[in-house]
Image (cartoon, protein in one colour):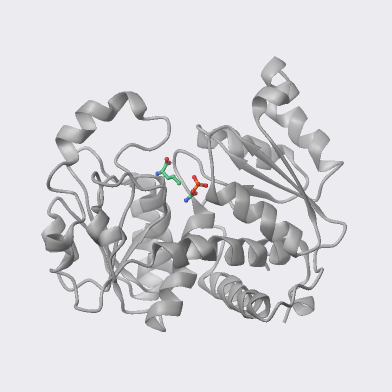
Length: 315
Ligand code: CP
Ligand code: NVA
């Protein structure tokens, strides 16, 4: 049962629960196309705290909640008593008395863990230095939509073994997608993410692998994914990272040509054009980045509904 859970890493969800979220996201998306917006979350409030900038996460959650008949409050720590030393725990306890669900984007993953531990309502990680579960739910919906299935596909990650990569490892391993991560030495995904992915893969039959060679990863891939070389909070490493990542880890037409002829390109966005991806690829016919961005809203709506309501009320 998803209702009442905290979603901090994606490890909280079974493959069946992920499938349920994707099914509801598809249903809500289809209804929205027809102009049907049921007020499933009328009188419910989401409070979001953003320690870092956001375009997609903030807007998709706010619009999603509005479309469900609910309300959202979005805050930055500087306008809260957090900036004057109120603890995360006391903040969580207070907000739990006012709103129905919390989401937080934090630098240090432990901050969202503390929020979840003290809150008496569900808490969603809206991105931390380690994990980005909302992104991966949207990615899985997008892949299923475009490829018609998840199991048995090959996904190549090229670039930094970052928060998005860590969570994609879990998502792929749970859903039976074979994932190869190509990263420079020293820029590996979290050990914890790999170990958990290997465990999940034993059940799903997915193959999880890492390499330093992007060409090996991309060979015969159905999906090629990358992300910025410089995640939020790593700005001071820019010069060093550029030397390490470029030119080998850039997704360009030459690298894409090694994937399957019908391969697609994905990126959580924002993209640094000319760094991890060329204009030609992100604007090219294989790119599905805008569908991927759109699906953030549909999967988040599904997640909010399933965290707050009984499953029976939704299908
Ligand atoms: N992909 C993503 O989370 O984008 P934002 O940083 O714009 O929210
Ligand atoms: N890895 C990126 C993702 C942004 C959505 C970051 O953490 O900045």
